[in-house]
Length: 308
Ligand SMILES: Cc1cc2nc3c(=O)[nH]c(=O)nc-3n(C[C@H](O)[C@H](O)[C@H](O)COP(=O)(O)OP(=O)(O)OC[C@H]3O[C@@H](n4cnc5c(N)ncnc54)[C@H](O)[C@@H]3O)c2cc1C
Image (cartoon, rainbow, N blue to C red; front, top):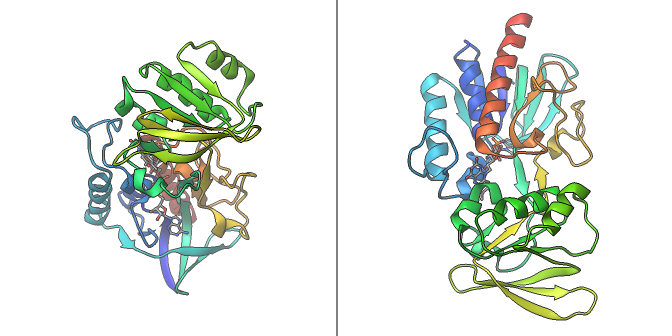
């Protein structure tokens, strides 16, 4: 059993920021980063919306810098994957996939989320080449081009309105003709001339050679397929928080698996904090993950100092 003050689970922007704030407050901090530490930003090559970088920065470069910064400050960096969190109050026992265990006075959960994709065979090939699960992140690269969005919830509708500001034509593809999105947002979309709804339809193929050139959609009522020419395909069908390992713990989760945390990142278990996409219903952006991570690091340090 390895004893430490704080275990931060996750080595994305949220986990790294939490660790940076905690270690600088004199807290002995371990990051359990999982097999591929770095998180979702490793999947993207150009980040343009993280303040402080004049030119676009690659996801790998940004995460490599965060990891180096953590190590320089004295954070112990591991590739441990946490499979279990036990304890109703401090100290907590964390079990890793290889059986190793940590005893920690406090825990920050920063395990992120995974985008839900469509399950089409061509998806891997086109990710980063016109296919994206994040319009806020990648929409700007599509200015002046025709794009499609898939989904029927608030995210898809808000993405459509966002993209319609700088894309001449936006198609919103939805498998039904009823929507989960708020009525007000639906009305706004319907009243935006360059957004066209493609209803009762599902994408069955992404068309293109090296990058997205179009999408083939099938009408689920008639069976008829149609090709829509576009340069970008945005999938907005939800994200899966990486919180499965908390199912048997006392940390409360929402129906969709998000960690329930208050504005100071406190979860339902005193001494367990949550930050970033694993607890974020709305934004899922790196800078926000880093911001909530900083909050969690500050809160965890205060908690540990109080219980020493
Ligand atoms: C393709 C793509 C492009 C994007 N582009 C942008 C952009 O341009 N700008 C922007 O602001 N945002 C962008 N985002 C969103 C951004 O990546 C996320 O909001 C951000 O990474 C969330 O940070 P996080 O630390 O909460 O989670 P993540 O980055 O997902 O990191 C989670 C970490 O937890 C680890 N982990 C998970 N489970 C366990 C476990 N059980 N044990 C140990 N470790 C575990 C993972 O290995 C990982 O290290 C993009 C996302 C994607 C997918």
